[in-house]
Amino acid sequence: DVKVTQSSRYLVKRTGEKVFLECVQDMDHENMFWYRQDPGLGLRLIYFSYDVKMKEKGDIPEGYSVSREKKERFSLILESASTNQTSMYLCASSLVGGTQYFGPGTRLLVL
Amino acid sequence: GQSLEQPSEVTAVEGAIVQINCTYQTSGFYGLSWYQQHDGGAPTFLSYNGLDGLEETGRFSSFLSRSDSYGYLLLQELQMKDSASYFCAGAYSSASKIIFGSGTRLSIRP
Image 1 (cartoon, rainbow over the protein chains, first blue to last red):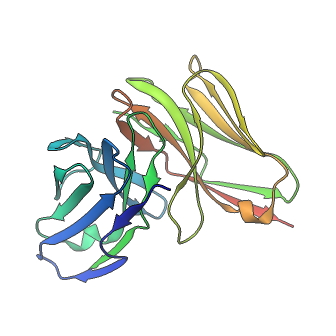
Image 2 (cartoon, each protein chain N blue to C red):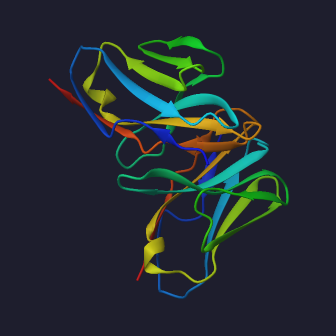
């Protein structure tokens, strides 16, 4: 079974802090994705990566950056957390054109 | 840009059939997927249409019409456990970029 893990299920941070969200997949998938999910807005794509060290902006990249140094790991970075970044963050991985497999999500609260 | 539209809520009766529609923008479009998400859970894959027509997987079927920029998810013999949110997701840009609709919350009455 494909497994996608995220470093934390719940996280509380203060405004201005640098936040790292880690995602690891064990199926050698080329593609990895970061979404945020807010009520009524569905899943909005922040960044995706189609290969090591390759990344592309999604629909809402402002305030976020990503890092993919190894194929299995995709990190989301909030350089200076703000209260409007309070959300559920979901990581996913897939083969090119394949089914996405999601991690359990990280619920981030920024105070 | 790319965006997908679907109804925000649908209500149906146990045992009935329900159809959830999705319209999408065509620029760079490769295919349409459907995902189910229960409250507190992560989205899980249901179905994918890369070509026009109907794909059937048990009680769930999905349809795509590229000429109409439209697809739907059909759920038959509804069960209470089908109460969840359903998302259509479009694959764009060589199928590497996946954009989700805002989701349809399906409520099922006994």
